[in-house]
Image 1 (cartoon, rainbow, N blue to C red):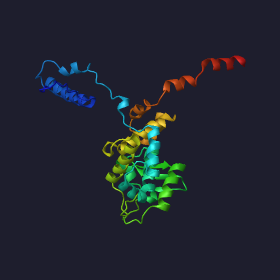
Image 2 (cartoon, helix red, strand yellow; image 1 turned 90 degrees about the vertical axis):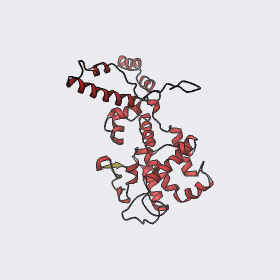
Image 3 (cartoon, rainbow, N blue to C red; image 1 turned 60 degrees about the vertical axis):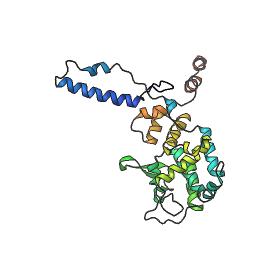
Image 4 (cartoon, rainbow, N blue to C red; image 1 turned 45 degrees about the horizontal axis):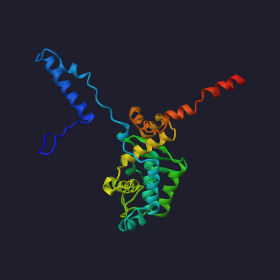
Length: 265
């Protein structure tokens, strides 16, 4: 693209290239089948290699930033005077939401649909509704129980809704998806020290959960099951973020040590 001051090269992203290649392939195959062309030109598209999405492009919080985010929701760190007024009334609720996002990698719709009756302390689990209306029971750990009980016992307002939503607005109604998005954006922006409009969406906390779990050594198949990824290749994108993965493997497998143990026997 030429301008008065400079020339710019406009490039398509990999998804755009893949979509355009698919459209051209269908067109050329149709024309060849209808004998409008002597050769199927889509054969020439096969050698085209599309750049794969780079793992570094996945946006998520680092473990240190998660700690900053939780500190902000606990102590009002980084909040404006106006935000602190709301924080006084919603800090336990907001903390519970952020802990559940970063522990379980829930989708925003799954968080929005949580009910008070979803929590079963006796069985140490809670029910969520996945895509396509599938019901799934998730295990409760001590952290989740602590923040949920703290919110219910000390902060949850009187419910003015027809059903029994777990997380309520100040008006006693079920929190909207938009409200949940806004609170996540606020606290993630504090963690990253960026303007509010540059904060992350709940889906980025889902990516954060996936990366953190793999970082702590859980297998990609366990993480795939927890996050309900349809394909393990999706989970593998987050596995690329595990720092020093090769070094960890090699350090845990000292061949000479194993050989010496055998030799002593």
